[in-house]
Length: 283
Length: 223
View 1 (tube, each protein chain N blue to C red):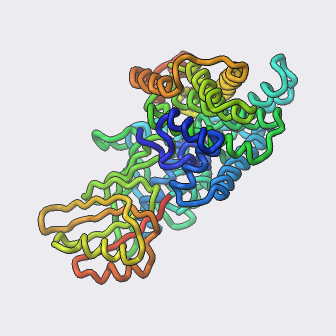
View 2: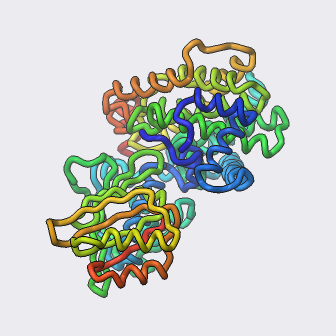
C-alpha cells in the first residue's frame, strides 16, 4: 500500500533522503520489483504527459462536442504574458493536456482524466525552469503520486464523491509538492505547498456543462495549475500553512461529503444550470 | 476510499480520455466482462444505469465498453471507433438505459452470448478514478477489482473443494490475496472467487479441472 498519511511519508523521506525516493521504495516493495523498474514506469508516464502537451499545443485537439480546443495554442502563441515564462508554460501545458483529454486523446490520469492537465503543466514547466535531470522529474512524479495517495486514503479523488476540489484540488496539491521537491525544497516545504494548494481550492464544486469533461474542466486545469504555482512560490519562500496536510486532506473530504449531490458531477448545479450552460448542453 | 495499492493508481492509468470513471473505468468493466465470459461474445446487451446512462454517451462510455469487450487496453487509440470495430468483428452490441436499483451511479450490466450457446450476465460499477468493481456474475454476488489476477471456480457445494483448489495453488507457488465463496443454497451450485498475487497457469487450471466437484474455471487477468 502507498502511505496513508503525510506524517508517515515524512518519516520515510527522512530515511530515504526525499519524498520521491520514499514513495519509489514503498512502491517497489509493494509490487515486488526494483527501484529502477519503478523509475522506468514513472518515466513512461512522463513521456505520455510530454506527448499530450505537444499534441495539445498544436491546437488540433477538438472535443467531440466542439466546445473545447485551441486555447492551449492561443496561450502559447501569445506568450510572454504578464506573469512570465514558467507561468505561461504551465498554463499552456495544462490546457494542452486537458484539451487532448477532452478529445479522447491519450493522457495520464492525475489523479483523474478530467484533472490530467494540472500536474504535467506545473511539473514540466518547473522542471525546465530549474533544468532538472530526468530522474529527478520522475522522482517528483512519485512524490505527486504519494501525495495523491494520502488524499485518497483520507478523503477522495473523484468529483462524484467530493466535487472538483477532489480532482483539480488534489491535482494542484500533488503538483505543488512535486514542484517544491524539484526546486530543491525540503519534504516539509513540499507538505506546506500541498496544503497551500489544496486550501486554495477547498469547496470547489464539480459542475460540468452537459455532464461533459469540457466546460469548465479544461480551463480549470489551468486555474488549478496557477494555484499550484502560487503555493510553490510561497512554500519555497518559507511560508508555512499552520494546518498540517493530513488535516487539510480530511477537511477536503468532510467538505466534499457536505456538498449537495447537485454539485458533485451530476451536472445539476453550478455552471451547468446557468442559462448559457443549459443552452450549450442542448447543442 | 481505501489506501491505494499503487502510486500508479493515482498518477495513472495511462488512458484515452475524457473521463477516468466514465471512459477508462468502462474499458476495464468491458475487459473484465470479456474475461469472465471467457472470450469474445457475438452479442452484448448492455444496460446503463444512473450517471452511465445520463452522461455516458458524452464521455464515450459506449465506445469504452465496446473496446473492453474487444480486449483493448485503456490507452488504445482505437477506443474512439470501438463500436464500428465491434460491428466489423461480428459483435452485435445493443445499449439501453436501465434502472438497476440501489447500486453505484456508474453501473452497467452486460449480458453476453455467443453462437455456441455460452451466456453470462455480469454487473459492475466504475467507482472513482479508473477503479472498478465487478459486483455480480450470473446469480452470484462478487467483488472483483481487476487490480490482481482472479480465478473464478464454479463448483458443486461439498466438503473439500476449497481445500483441493487452495492446495493446487499452493503447490504451484500461487499466493491468494483474497477469497470469497458463495452458493445458491446448501449442497447446490457454488462460486469461488480468488484474487491471486501471481497469474494462475494453464497447467494448474488443467489439474483443478480434474477435481470432481469443479464444473468450470475462468482465469481473469488483471486489467
